[in-house]
Image (tube, rainbow, N blue to C red; front, side):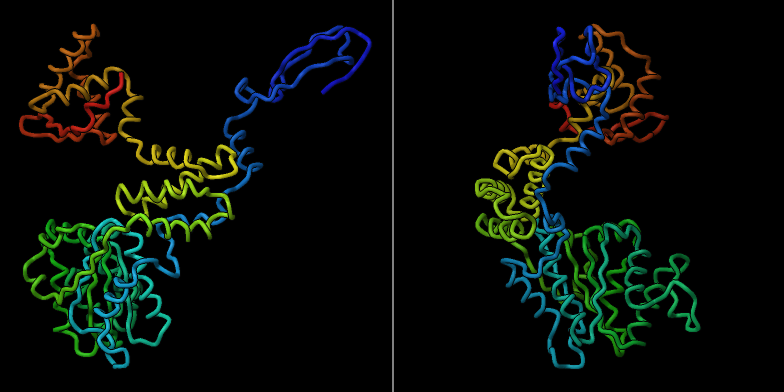
Length: 437
């Protein structure tokens, strides 16, 4: 702003965002001052959240379809997975024209390696085609990591088969959320399969979590599932297990293994050209042309291909890089954004938390790392020695015990009470080299 006049004027540099600035002069109607566009000069008059929101509102959005960059997105065409899709379909169907199109015995799909997103896409595409077609098949899906109880897992399948949560005239068509035995829940699933002549496929994602749950509870629902066809007269039941754990089958009951007509589909890692092609296809949908530079695409593909061969890792890198570029109000996604994204993704959250800890909490964690016998007494003794080394007055043992409980809540250490009221502490050995003073 500039107002000219004949009187002498004062010149003062101010922040245009600071509304409290004044110009001191003889005649305030005749003034001249320079507006300096420096948002870092003052934070007293503009809220930092408002500043960021204004920048986001006024800035250019680089990503036009964010869903495409998320690992849960299901593309219509799954690149470089045709052999796996064919094998899955062949293992499920014996005769597409027959009345019973699905195999009446247990079929096992153990999906390993790291490409979880395309493993699930490869499964859900046949599922979608089956549902759109006229095949007498019902595919029911559940995730054993999300359904943390055996009861909940079976209820999830039952709901998808038509078992209601409210009482009906046919009591066996009712499946309450709680209150029945595991055996009775499964009996009602068998009942609805036979009554409706359903050829069902149960898909259990993260099935290694179910194997652990069975070990803890002693209730082997997998055994019941694999034996279900012996009880069915008109329907059938097939099992698909999805896992990234190559060894989880070792935890299964031998009777379950012997009952399964096991067929494994192993998903190998993508190579660099394949990852680049997958990214290129996603970029075409997620961004306007020219937003992602060729150099950024090449670096993103190379980093993911070299480290893991995981398409999800490549998508994460690209998405985070684009978000960084957006926040910085930059017009394109460059190699530097990819590098910044890699650093952000790999950032050790434990290290970040440790940097913010007060001195004595850091000393306690270091004491845990140095102690040969992990008990509160040993930790306190080591802690006192460290305090002497750096000339700090130690806290009382009671206060140290309280602090250990507070640190435990963060998940960095784990403690449990053992005999005579002592606390045994489990340490994370990776933390020692990351302590920041």
